[in-house]
Length: 208
Image (cartoon, rainbow, N blue to C red; front, side, top):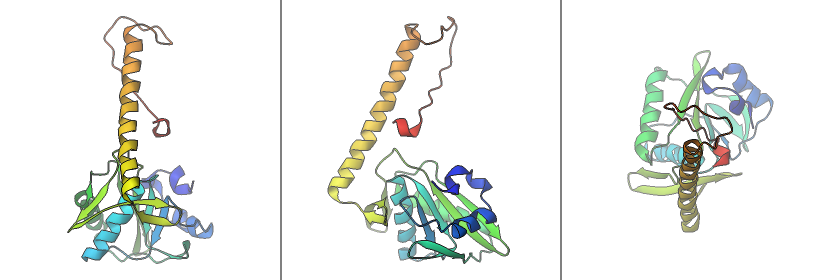
């Protein structure tokens, strides 16, 4: 776990970025560095979509754009020259929304200003709507991640992700049904009054 996992995305600042470099936080299954902005060429767009979908199909994580890395270790802040950062974030959001199916819920993009330059951090949550496919101009592929970064999935791995998704959905449905049954039958740890009730189910992702 890095400091990016311990701090809200919108609170990450220049000092946090520098800390990643000082601590030599290496690329892994949950973090990737890119030195340059994603352009409008098809191959560049495909690369971004591949990285984003790979995080969602694995354990989630952060794609950080604007940091130079050597052999996976961040060395310096290169930064990005962007005239309109809000417009750029909107472009990236549209790109990931339109080029990946199903849409990744909870994806968030944050910018960090460093003097006249920017760092862009894309947070991709672990998804339970698996698997996500890159669909961009006849590029229809599934990606995931391991300790060496993104990788293409084979047929068996894709089938397994479908099974994982279905199992997670069934567990959530069972959890909800079981809890509602306990409330109706009066088997809750604390006795509830016979009034109309609003039930909120909170399930930690690691329990699914």
